Length: 303
Image (tube, rainbow, N blue to C red):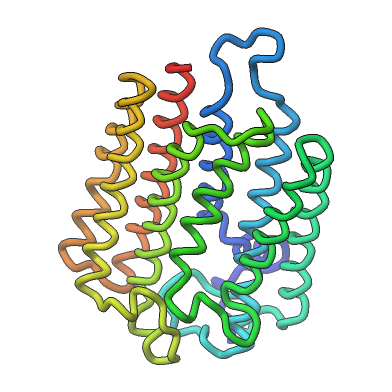
């Protein structure tokens, strides 16, 4: 069923791409690049602009592909319908047939692969292995016969691929080596990205329980999921600031993200449920952006 308020045409596909999730793709690329770029942009010491833009495009394409793939897979399984609390899904709501949504997911996976191929040609063919693993992880999150997102492993996927892999990979395409500072910076990036998924799954516990979707939130239960969310957010900020031990006091800028994080953490601990958690998702996204900006600034200024 559709309603008069439902988007149509291009707006429908933009909504299906879930643009509010895109900070999860942008932040690791910016942070990873800042971790290895020299603040003094002399010859050979600054960032390679086209590689930064290509890494950003790959990350964004993978995020959009994940969103369309989840929409398709959940829709054909019947685990999404119009009773869901979150953003309207294309297949589950009946607004778009499964086929076009599946093709959209494959299209963005293909775009990510094509751009990644150019990066691999420039920075090292070993990136093909990383790219293939990322694409497989994107599809099998909710796709395939045994999607790992239904087994409570979605948070592992987010931490690894939108934290470690995306951040370290973005640094790698610049300097063609793995640097310790990029690994350290990847931890807070991964933790805050994981927090975003945790609060999303907290909101969906009732519906996911009903359809047998055993996310980590369903397995932990409501109370422990709330504590996990706060632990991840605080842990991300502390992990970012802790890099100051090696890189200097500019990294303490990361602590400023707590000012943005206070509101969503308070709402979660006070027991917000259902539609009340939708603005918490937005606030968590802003926390992610704030942490990414402050962490990147600290890395750049300390270089």
